[in-house]
Amino acid sequence: MPVSPRAVRSGFTLLELLLVVTITALVTATAAIRWSTVAHNASAAAAVTRLEAVDAHLRQYVRSRRRPALLAIDRAEGRLQKRYLGDKKSASPWESLGAGLQLEEIRVAGAKGRQSVIEIPFATTGVSPTYGLHLVGPGERESWLIVAGGSGQFTPLESESQWDAALDLVDP
Image (cartoon, rainbow, N blue to C red; front, side, top):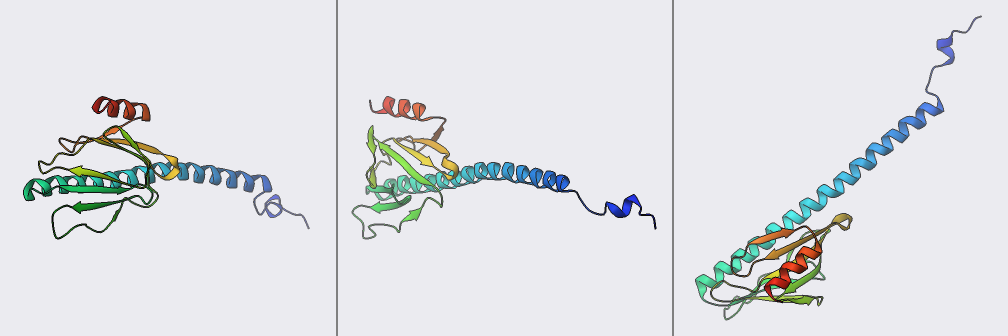
């Protein structure tokens, strides 16, 4: 009985299977790399939004109540706390900056901060010292921020050298 060529080749060859697996692995690796960038950008954006909200709240609070306050930043744990001075409500609960995000360095008034908790004072006029934050997110991606003490404006910077230069201009 003759065997047709179609009956002999009823499945994929090993080479075809390896080719499909390799292409699938390359597509998955590309997606994972892009996802880590998206995850970092989302984590950093959420942290900056949280920081902006806390900073704006403290500036508004000290101006309206005429009482100073502090922004406590726990570098090791990646969290924030509003501390009200001269008020019955002395401190708010700690707020996390977000999962997978850590504060590598905080600089206030030109002093580098590697200690665990740094306090940034807010005067009754709503002014604080200018401060800088160095954030590290998923995939070891880094972000640098400067917060203007007079206005509370947040400015992202591209590199650590720009960050250092900007902070050195404020307080050499």
